[in-house]
Amino acid sequence: MREIEAAELKKTLGKRIKFFRKKQGLSQTQLAELVNIEMKSLSRIESGHNYPQCENLVAIARVLKVAPWQLYFDEKEPDLETMKKEIISAIDKDKSKITPLYQYLAYLR
Image 1 (cartoon, rainbow, N blue to C red):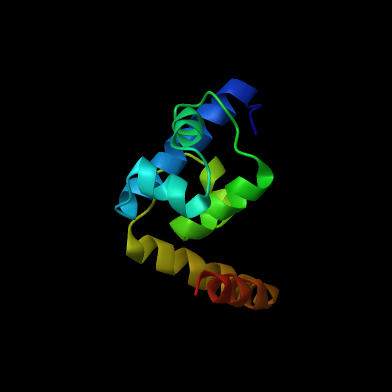
Image 2 (image 1 turned 135 degrees about the horizontal axis):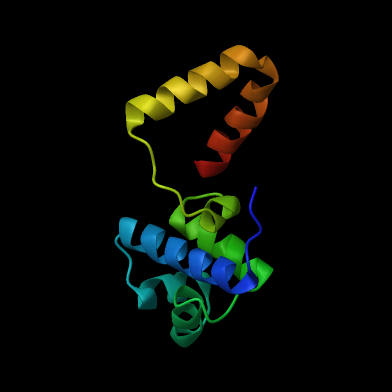
C-alpha cells in the first residue's frame, strides 16, 4: 500500500465530500446549515485547504448518508451487480462479517 501525503488526503477528502453532497442534491450552503458550520469553512474543506473537525466530519457523513471512512477513498464505484457479488462472496467466505454489515446498514437508516 502506498503512502499518502497529508495534502493529497485533504484534497481527496474534499472531493469526496463534494461528490456525495452533489449526489444528495445539496448546495454548499444547505450542507453547511445542516452540519452547523460556516459555508466558507465547508468551501475550504471541499477545496482541500482544511480538514474538518472530527465532530463536523461525522456530521457531514451523517447528512450525506455515508460512513466517515467513505470520505477518505477516491475510488470508482463498481456497478451494482459487481457490488452484490463481492458482498455475497465476502459473507460466504467469512460469516463473522454479517453482524458488522447488518449494524452498518442499521446505522444508515
